[in-house]
Every structure is written in C-alpha cells, then in structure tokens.
Amino acid sequence: MTSMIDPAWKTLVERKHLLLTEAIKDLEHRRKNSLSAQQEELSVIPKLKDDVTKLQDEVSKLQDVIASLKLDKIALEEKIDSDERVTSLEKERDYYRKESTRLNAAVESMKSKLDKKLRG
Image (cartoon, rainbow, N blue to C red; front, side, top):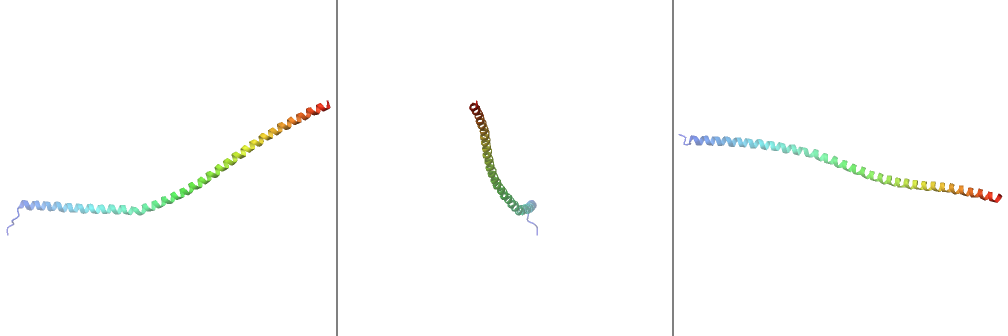
C-alpha cells in the first residue's frame, strides 16, 4: 500500500499539529496560573474582613473618645464661664471695698472737721 498523502501536506499537518499541541499546553499553563492567582486573591479575603472588622472597632472606640472629649470640652467651657463670673464678682467686691474704705475715710475726715468746728 502506497501512501497517497503528499509529503509536503503531511509536513504541514504535522507542523500545525505541533503548533496546536503547544498552544493547548500554553493555554493549560495559563489557566493553572490564573486559577492559582484567583485562589491567592480569595485567600486574602478573610484577612481583609478581619482587618475591616478591627478598623470598624477602632472607629467605634474613636467615636466614643470624641463624644467623651466633647463632654469634657462643654464642662471646661462651663467652668471657664463660672471662673470668669467669679473673677468679675471678685473685681466688683474689690471695687466696693476700696470705695467703702474711701467713703469711710471721707466720713472720718468730715467727722474730724465737724468735731473741730464744734469745739472751736
């Protein structure tokens, strides 16, 4: 039995077969690499969820701290207002003490002058 297939045709088919085989191997290699990469990406998700949960906890704690600081600020502002009122009242008291001392001195001076006139 003689082969009826042209040798050039046979070579072309063999070359095409080799190229297709190599392309199939390359695609299989790429598919495996892609699956590995996807698995690596998926393995990170639980850690990311953990990180997100921790960050949410930290945000919650910071919000509590902020709320507490706001209350502290209000208390300090009220204390400052109270201290300012006390300072103002102390200044007013000091003014009236000085005025009282001055008026007492004036009364004593008038009494002295009046006593001198009555005796003299």
